[in-house]
Image (cartoon, rainbow, N blue to C red; front, side, top):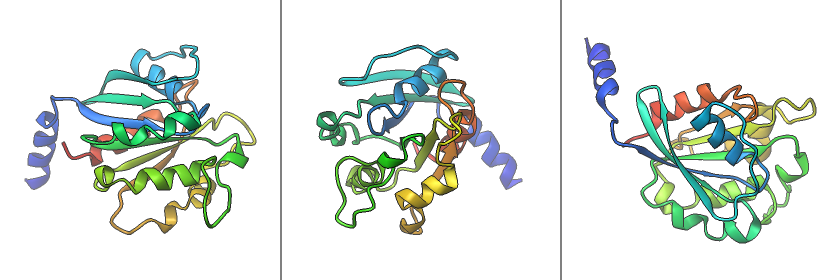
Length: 189
């Protein structure tokens, strides 16, 4: 009975959009993923110099997704987009292994691992579930999701932190449904 009530509640729970912030290094594929979700096709895009925002319907949820540019000078502004966000999508270009993790204990500002740790340190996002999209899985040499999780330190996150890593390909959409289904089930609006 409780399960039936929970399913009924979930079917009505979020008619207002769920605010999602999508970040990652430049050229990770954030805008390609956003357009794939919104339009169902690949739309060629230029590097995002500020942000894109789109409302995307997914199953019983409406996501307002803020796709924020990933260039180094724009990353300094990411924290201005965090407040009020219900979830995080962090996109990693798994075909560029040298930018996944620098391996330096003191960190850097050039790798996905260090920038992800900066995102997770924000007080505005401490309760937000994190969907990590291990993008560009269509490339044979891309790091696989389990390898990427280890490289960016996901296994070292505090036990209470909700996270999920999903292999995907923004160009053809593989893996996006599974990833956003997890996110939809874990956001609290």
